[in-house]
Image (cartoon, rainbow, N blue to C red; front, side):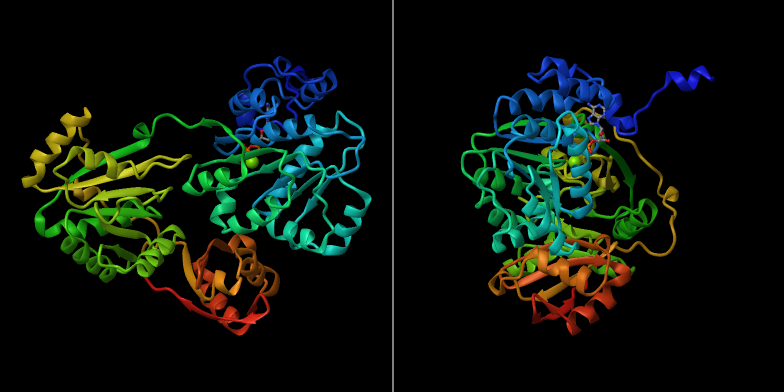
Length: 481
Ligand code: ADP
Ligand code: MG
């Protein structure tokens, strides 16, 4: 036999990334021997960092907000906890896990089943939309210890009275940031309100947008927080400076976009007039560019931001004042169209890029007159700027840079009781689009905005206008950049 093969028993469950992170032993936790044996059997040699940080707190019964990147082993962190809280002899739903999508709910169910294998007869049930109700109702009648599901379908079961949560002791919100992105806040609230108050609540997320604070304030009790963020953000931002002549400055922005092809770019100008001119130039070159300025009323401002965060516009052009308080994550690039006289403003501008899992670009265009400002920034921030010649900016990729999504506006929102799940359902269940072709959904009082893949935009527009959302005929229009 080939000894090399025998020597490497890689269990299918242990992903390279999480296994490589394996740290302290699970044996340091208050877990019974059969649970530890099962972890060893699964090839979990040690805890991943998020498990090592979270489990001592959650096994002590604390509420927890945990932030760590994808693939860091968050599922096992909450699964081990909810299993520790579980009484297998009690046939009632004792834990509930909310997930954003059916696929994720199924993955979570599988991981819980693997971890529950140490115990006999623990029933884990997945309740998601897109499956028929009848088998779910039958399974619920047979009893389940743990339910994993998406907010919309769980709500349906709660409304019918087919899901009883009175014996629940552990509630998990998994991928909370994605659930918020998908517009599930209200649905989550409806489900959580039906959970008994004395319970342990665990919230897991890869990023930490503002809505998370809102969720935890509403539904958690003195939560502990563990955040395992990557190396400091500044090191993830790649800065490049370009020397430009005044008359070519605005044109260079388009060259940067066509060369680096970032999906989302925030471009800063020092003046409103410069913003206006840049948007005109970019649109003339075929880019989808939006302007954020102080003269917009709240509704237009919201609409611009929705389109940009839904990735339906490539560039958002703003002054520092207009961009104040913006909380946009996941920007691939920031462009300083003008150099700011204030080094702190420069830091603030470029800090908007750099994603959790990727590096961000910060491009700065400087004329000869602005070299003094660049010098002041270098001195204040302690770095030497890297200059790139403009001739290196050649178009890459195929065709013009277009945003991946298009935003459709449905005239009707919260006041009409439209929920994100209704829109997702209309597009997937009724109209036959794949969930992967639908992006972020944002429900406002009077309007609902849904991002769809650019390739299906006109078809989705036509079919939504001809069809129904929540049993009602709706008016839908396509938002142009
Ligand atoms: P996350 O939810 O943080 O994105 P997952 O919980 O899906 O990550 O875990 C990623 C992978 O790591 C899964 O295949 C899981 O089985 C594996 N894994 C989790 N914890 C460990 C561990 N302690 N040792 C080895 N593999 C692990
Ligand atoms: Mg996960």
